[in-house]
Length: 147
Picture 1 (cartoon, rainbow, N blue to C red):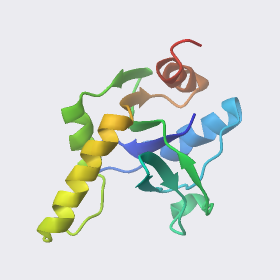
Picture 2: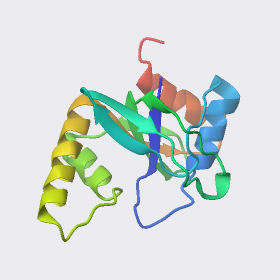
Picture 3: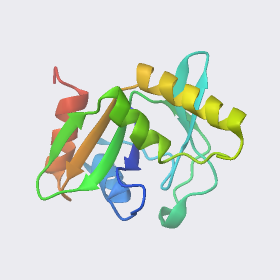
Picture 4: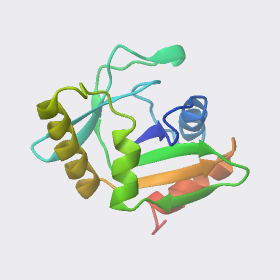
C-alpha cells in the first residue's frame, strides 16, 4: 500500500515523518519516494505521489510515482492511535499543507476542487505515534483491517 505522510500541525516540523517512513522501510519493506514532500497529482482519476528534487535533510528524492491509497497526518504521541478523519477534518488538514497562490482566486478554487476530489477518493487518517514498531502495527491495522 502507498500512503503519503504529512504533519498534522502545519506550524511544526519534526513530527516524525522521516522516523515513521524509516520504520515502515525497516519493518515492512516499504520504499520512500521523497523524504520531504511528494507532489500529489490526479491523472485519469488516479491519485499519485510523485518524487521531485526537493528532498529536505533526508536526501531521498526518487523521480518516480506511485498510486496513493491513503494519506496519513502525523503527530507525536505517548501512545499509538489512529483515526480516519471526517471529510471536513481531512479538507482542513490538507488545505493547510498545500502551496498555492492564495491571491489567485482561480488557483485557490482549483486547489479546493482538487482537495475535495482527493478526500472523496483517498482515505485520510491521523496517526498519533511513538517511535516504535507499535506505530507501524497501529497504522497497519487501520490500513489493512482484514490483516
